[in-house]
Length: 113
Length: 112
Image (cartoon, rainbow over all chains, first blue to last red):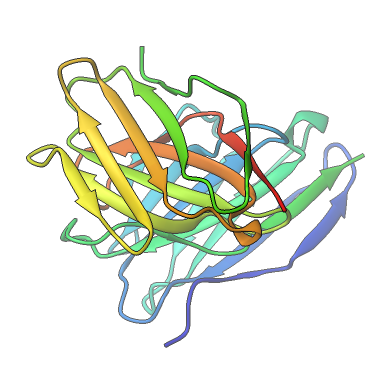
């Protein structure tokens, strides 16, 4: 049973660039949530996707956008990168029914120079 | 506000001792609480969860206690092992798949 996978594992970008991160949910899960984790902090909720639509959103600017595909995989896009966007980006998957908790992937480490 | 906090940022214990990690939450509407373990360079790993209709839940070597009166959550690890060394986060939510609010974490160090 495959767990949550994310790609790439590491990424270096410069300010102003755009980045796309990818996530494949755990087998059987239909909901994907994205979190940003700054160094030494707990993860912060960015948004959640279900049925290919954004269902919930945290306090992140519109530069952060996402997409969910029919196979439930998801992408996180960040435009006009800022130095402060450097963080570990985590994807978590779950069932929409709410009967099961969120399981996290290994994350993508983004460094913005 | 919407936040989950932890009482202690670091905890150091001897191998074989029991560990207790504490967490305070502020959202009275939260009805679902989870403990995650995060090792360096890895994503959070689910340990145990508890819903608000319970006050205690046990897993393998771990127990979570929930005190809704004082909005307090704790994780007890029995016979702590070096492999338990990690940062532990509590998180709160409403329902199992809604957004989770995390605290800053407690770093547990197990000394041999």
